[in-house]
Length: 545
Image 1 (cartoon, helix red, strand yellow):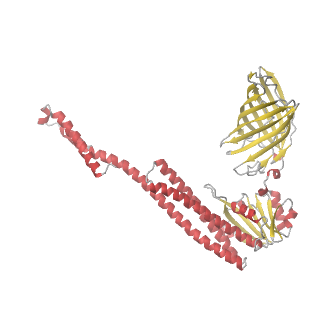
Image 2: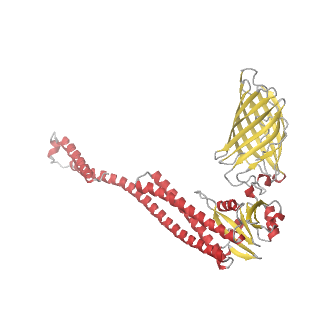
Image 3: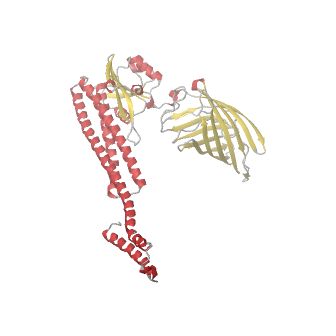
């Protein structure tokens, strides 16, 4: 959790908080913003959770607890809606709008409404932000319960704390720096500010100006977003985090895991190991035959690994470099297999085979993870098959849902098949170039056999997907044929009465029934019988089911 000290002059820019920025929480993410403030004769604690349900709207619901020097307390509750028109950049102003209501219980109950426009602009290459606020605050009626709601509170901020929980990748600012990394912590961007206020007919109209200094990028980074070092410490493995390039030169280091490394860290790797430490994405379009090669005494492998077992998760390119008995892994997203490997290596026996054995272990775990993902696909197909084949019914909407689910599984299966092929190519290269000892060669051969079996299983899954797809299309055709059959039966049943009506509609001079009083009722009864009899016959044959 990060703390940022911010001493603020009294500010009231239309909102019951200090000057705010033109920014909202990322889509499908939440954070909680809290701070402690010292006032004349008392103190207060604010907590404001905010969420963005998935669009361009941030919803905040929170409040504060005030405690006076005489022991008196009061509460404040806030509900706010904030939207962003334009994010701040160095080239232009970001703009946002916030609307909210506040309920203050201070012996009396006051209900206030407020609104403000926020504008922000990046300064000093993104290391600072300039904020401008223009707002309006209407003081609501007070229900007197004792000593009244009290005047507007002037306050001095003591400390600000903010906790973030994000699902998406870090957002890149215009200068290429990441704003926040993954699920982590960050400092609130509250700042020194000054505001003007004037009272008019119960309204507060104000303008606020503030400047926020952003901490360096490393302040926001989690442990897994730095260079993770694994060193041989006797018979055990010790974990450390690199803070300077000299730590990379330790002879005990055998694995460096670089998750989303920044440019200085990449420069450390180039300086210490004299390698091509470029991001894996930059090599994504190279030919397959060039994904494994040796250069200046270093072995380079570029492979794709699964980013997770979720439905919408694909692969992440990883660059694996073997130099001077040190394995270096470069990737922009943390991966389950590498994360699990890091956890298992901490304070555990040193892996046999050193860096080369660890490289083989990475591919072996990737194959195991692919096998687990294939089991998930098979379970999903089993569920779809049970609903499609066992029930043998469903609407067009359900059929569309089944087809979409099958298409998603087909895509996942194809991704797994490609991932297995990529692992097989890398392991075959290691075995062919004689980079392995006898024990490691046995492990690689076993892993290659596992890949062959999983490769056959992916073919089976493709066949099962095609079978279920054909079954769904067949049931759709059956449902359509039922509709066509109803129209066909109706047309056949209506043919006899049509024939009777056509006969009596002919303009012949001598038609005895036309001159009889019973002629018309007889024709109607005859047509009714000609309709009922075919329907009865069709029903008896089961053609109407």
